[in-house]
Amino acid sequence: MPIQSSSYVADVFDQIDGRVWITETHVDSVAGPLMFAYLAADTTNATAVMNDRAVQLEDQLAEAEFEVLINGA
Image 1 (cartoon, rainbow, N blue to C red):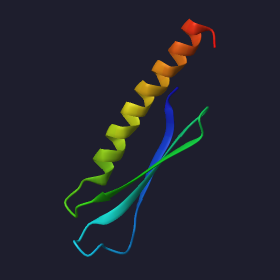
Image 2 (cartoon, one colour):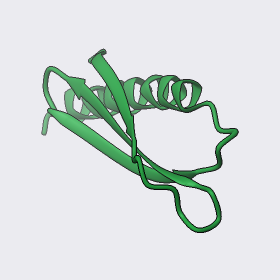
Image 3 (spheres, helix red, strand yellow):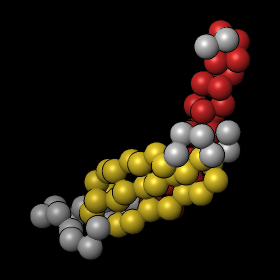
Image 4 (spheres, helix red, strand yellow):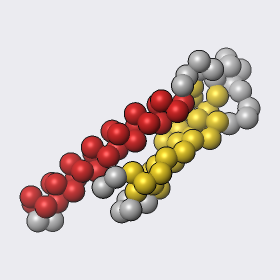
């Protein structure tokens, strides 16, 4: 199950310590939108974090699909 699209939004309001909320949305054809939110330092490469998470999600979704096929559930 590949991730069909991934995007992120950075909140326009910084926290007191300078961090900002990042909200990622990943969409696949089965599970629908998968959302993740985290506080990021201003030096964080949110695109790299999002792309890494998309790869991890694809692996997790493929493993879950495999388990369903094996267990017949």
